[in-house]
Length: 339
Image (cartoon, rainbow, N blue to C red; front, side, top):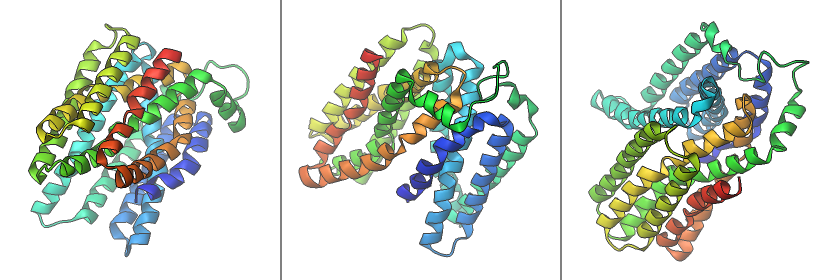
């Protein structure tokens, strides 16, 4: 299912986002949301697993495009406060992650299942598509090179060529891609590792809850610290603290210590994505569509990382898979040093 979600996105997202510079932001956003709605409705009525995979494959690039255009417009609306904007967006994303299990719990109380969950998601996406299509002010912050640019709009090849030739953008985008290890991948392998340490289902659930709470606290702190503290200092401090917490999680034999380590990873590791993504936007200002196109081109990393760590866990144990998560803070620290 995860591969299906990412596979079509890898092929389509980058060229679609680069091409989006040539169209109005609200039409690109509303069209993406409309496809999200249609794919969600399709997933709700599929007759078998293969049909569900196909619906998810369409959902992947559509949701990625919708998120990218919204994020780009918000970030470029306040170019001097990119870190604060990304922190607020990350807080909203965390709230969205919490909304999913809450929605499923509510549906289960009423005797309803995952198909209705897809229908609810599709209805919200359709409503957003209509709202965006009828909001001309969304075009005020264009996702392209800007209304003041002189000459004809760049072709798709020229736009992608510019993005791929911008060294800081590539570096920060790669660092940002590594931070994905500290999200779903961290949760999955932490649960496996805590189980190997003898943690009960309840203890594992509390550990993941501690990680979620730490993430909210860390992002709220980043939102307040943005503009007051040095971005370089924040990046180095968060990278170092996250690395220490990952090592503690890997070497500990206590589920309780592991829970504390996960809280710290949530506290500091949650800030790495918004900080690195803000630097990527700053590397190519006023061209958020191209920034997100480069990020989409790095989707194979998200697809391969769980498989590689799974092989490591199977061959050498879950502790070494946790050690592999050090790629994230190390990648961010190297980008901070070089760029």
